[in-house]
Image (cartoon, one colour):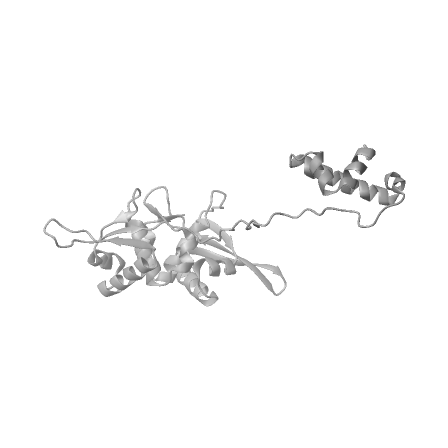
Amino acid sequence: MRIPNSFVTRFTQASDLKLACVFYSLIHKNTKRNLLGYEITVKQTTLVSLCGFSVSTVKRAASSLLKSGFIKSQKRQTNAPGKLGTYTYTIEAVSTASKYFTMDKKLMSRLNGNEFRVYAMCCKLADSSHKSFFQSYNDLSKLLGMSRQDVLRTIEKLVKGKFIRKKKIRTRVGDFTDNTYTVCIYVPHSRIKKAPRRSSRRQSIHCFTMNTPIKNTSSLYNKSSALSIGFKKKMRLLEIFFLKRGSGENELSITDPFLIICLKSNN
């Protein structure tokens, strides 16, 4: 998603910055636009989920953005008597044709407070090709209006969480200069479905044999007999099995001589 560069320094409260970024993540080519700005229709529960906020924090941040003029108007639909529906916000239209940075919106709910502010500044400062920047702690402190210690602690949290990567640069003299940071590309965790294990044991084939002698075999080949139909199906399955295995009739006659006789007489 595209976020205007001005957002990082314009919104000093982390909750205001995150909610403004969430609003811009919901803008697409079919988003309505009026004279005041973009019209965003969204459920409050959706904002809570995307921001990782509580309902009260979303309300407080929306009230702050309304007071600052970023949110031009805020209306809530009424679906039925006593039942409130979705909100429709009209937000300020800031061009993202140039002077913008990109951020994965799936990350926003995972970063809170100063972590989100510092990460947004890292995304803004990173170059488009390598996603790297080399500003010092003092530079970041001035840009964000935070103390150097707060910036240092927050950067370490982001490095530990693998949101950014830190690389120390050694000079020719042997000492270290300002660190180089790289914004990591977020890859969501996903479960890889494992293929079912194949059994090492060969599948058993049920062979049907005659345990008791049959005196009158003519009934087995009578088409009107239920026993005959079932018997012929079993014989056909056995025939297909041995043909696919490449075995001739000799193997079948060895396993059960009576079956090969029945198959021949049936054909």
